Amino acid sequence: MKTFCVMLKRNIKMFFKDKGLFFTSMITPLILLVLYATFLSNVYKDSFMGVLEEAGVTVDDRLMNGLVGGQLFSSLLAVSCVTVSFCSNMLMVQDKVSGARKDFLMGPIKKSTLAFSYYTASAFSTLIICMLAMVACFIYIAIIGWYITVADVFCIILDVFLLVMFGTALSSVINYFLSSQGHISAVGSIVSSCYGFICGAYMPLASFADGLRNVVMFLPGTYGTSLLRNHTLNGVFAEMSSQLSASNYPAVDEVVKGLRDSVDCNIYFFDGQVEVGTMYLVLSVAVVALVATYVVINILSKKKN
Image 1 (spheres, rainbow, N blue to C red):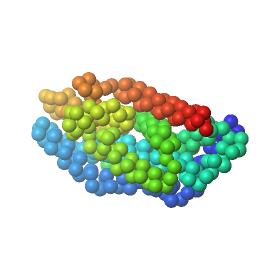
Image 2 (image 1 turned 180 degrees about the horizontal axis):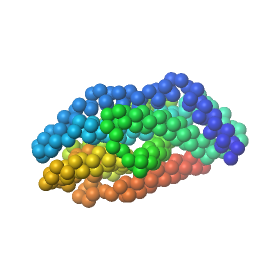
Image 3 (image 1 turned 30 degrees about the vertical axis):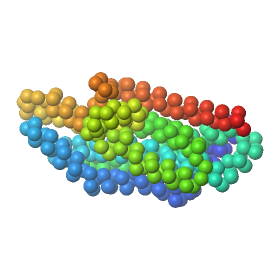
């Protein structure tokens, strides 16, 4: 345990000491927030306004801003929790490139201890950055239109934690096989450019073709995105239902359900709707499975050596 704590402390220090790596990991979520708020907010707003006008529904600007802001909030965190974990976990590959990993293994450090120190340090560093990004998103939502309940705030924190564990486990498995700076750059580029699309953060799954949507539903990241969507938008939809009911609108449930479907609060595995509890189960099982895979890889590598 003492060796693990020493290595954990060393790995965390190395991440925050690398100003370039830390700055890139830290600034990426903030840049995404600015880009989303600047360029995508109007696109989302026009899309929602078109749907509501077609249904003959009018809502106030603050509620509409809360709807758009909740979607931007969930998209940013869904992507950042995974992409930042790949950045923070690059230390494992850098130690291979520099030869530090071999030096550690020549001493009294078990390979399993070294592996878990990388995983834990990466998860810890990623969690700090993502929590700071979450606070920035909360401030943004508070400015444009706050409808998030206290219960949903705690659920969002849980969602971020699970997604960070998932992203760290996934990056640990993939990064284990990397052994050069070129590999680091290639994997980082692929993950940054592709993950947001396949998890439904950049484009809602409802806009995908049926075949592609069914394939993407096998990926755990899509459930993490939907969890964040639900907890950032539950309050908005509750307020919208209240306002429409007060105005005696005849099809409140149909309008709200249509909006929830369009932003992936409601997701469907083939024809069956996936409940929130099932989403948590899928994401948790994925974390356990990936961590187990990481452990098995290290054990098999040890036997081979």
